[in-house]
Image (cartoon, helix red, strand yellow):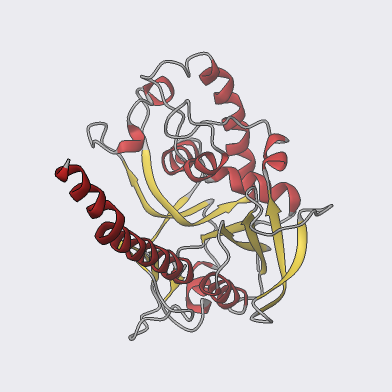
Length: 302
């Protein structure tokens, strides 16, 4: 069996996220890591090393191996701070727009694996175990396994294809959908070097609004499939709109062993936000029927 690392990336910590990670971890003999985007300190404290074993929610998640990512780590990779707009250098937007960056980071800290599976925090497997999913792809030697893998028509109107002629004019381009992705070790190395090479070229033209840095869902399949790497289309991932907020167990009434996205799963924060809005409305109501109307009447009398 190929040596494989599975990691889930999240920038929020909720019972839904932790329970889904545990389901992922308990479904396979692969090593599993929780990649936490911690540049906003959602995990407080100072850590000498980014790899930490942490507990969550009074034992719901115990001794979970975590990777605590921050901007200082990112800076050591010399990758450009470009998102959908070249002037937007927010690390949050950069890491969303260029999700392939995460693979380069993970591989440096966890080398010597043949394959790396990535799962976003807002996906869930509608069943008790990911075993059927992992079993299906266990013997697939593709360098890239990803949803929505297909060749693009240049006139497709796909958002991420726009403004990329500087890199891909005259080349066959491919689209993909990145919530669940597997990359081979050699594909990761190749993509990292291509990002570095292309950033040197893009630096000189980045201020031109007619040019855009490539989104991961265009960059990964286009670079790999045009350079002799093998790709497989992942069929299980189903995209939903609008977003679903599920309970902690993240289980629909009828399990179908499909992967769903996006499932935000942070209903605790949503309820807290709703409570705050209600409190604000109540204060406004009291104010409206008290001081403000009285002031209006007072002005009219003058």
